[in-house]
Amino acid sequence: MNQDREFDTESDSRLNSNEYNQNNDKESTKEIEQFCQTKYYATGSILPLGDGLTGKSVLTRLLLNPDISSTEHAYILYNTKKSLNIELEFSSEKIFVGKDLVTTSLQFYVFPGQRQKESPNITTFDEILSIFHYFPAMQKISVLLLVYDTSRSNTLKSLEMWLKVALAREWIFEKTLIILISNKTDLQLPDNNYVWQLLDGIYGMIKEKGIAIDEFQIRAIPTSCFTMEGVQLLKETITDWVGRNGLRSKGTR
Ligand SMILES: Nc1nc2c(ncn2[C@@H]2O[C@H](COP(=O)(O)OP(=O)(O)O)[C@@H](O)[C@H]2O)c(=O)[nH]1
Ligand SMILES: [Mg+2]
Image (cartoon, rainbow, N blue to C red; front, top):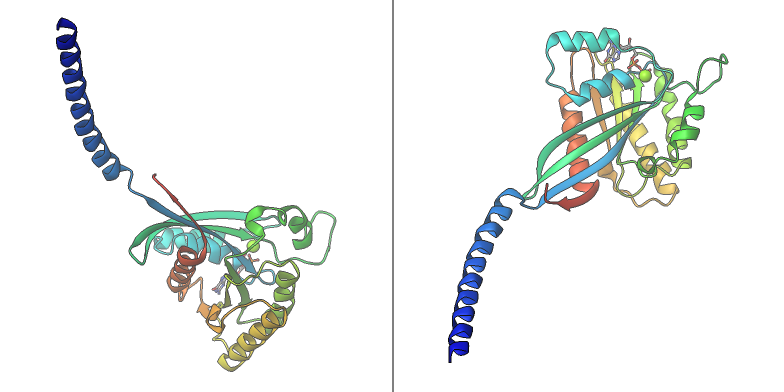
């Protein structure tokens, strides 16, 4: 009897403690849900390509934060040095993709536009690329920016060569957004007929390679790093694309 009672008591206390645990579990689950809701992440690599001095470095720095003060703006414009090396920049922003709040990270890989070896001290695009080409993030590019300077028509003609480089490296795939950037609109406005022709040409070259891409994935945005025309739109376009089409993952923090 005693043993039974003891057993009962024990089982009661176990029952109670189970109830307690269950209640406790519910509380902690609620807390976990509250503090550790599923978080969504997306990341993508952005590659600006174009001749030297078209504005790739300055534009990238402005894209990191288009809402900068006029002092910071002037600092970037006048203190961005000609770079002979790769520049890596990173920015992150939360945007809604459908009903999900997605932390969207942009990784910018800015190479120097120099292709000819003019002196032993000057590193070229191809030399730097020979190292960085093997970076996983360089295998598939989320957003390719083809940048030219509206005041120098030869930089527009070079874009075919830059696109060929991107195709030969197999950076473009079915989820790449390609943006033709007519930069320095403060100096000269782009020739829209020519821009449309070029967009068609780019589409044709990509299709020829057998890459399944839609026409809407090839766009044109005129920009000026001086007046900031188009910079905010470009930032939003890139972030939205990466948020929807970049490398997605889920987590709790
Ligand atoms: N007027 C004007 N100058 C610009 C613009 N964007 C860049 N620049 C200038 O062009 C030069 C080259 O820019 P940079 O970003 O270094 O070119 P990158 O060689 O393509 O990286 C710098 O002196 C910039 O201040 C622009 O939109 N308008
Ligand atoms: Mg540069």
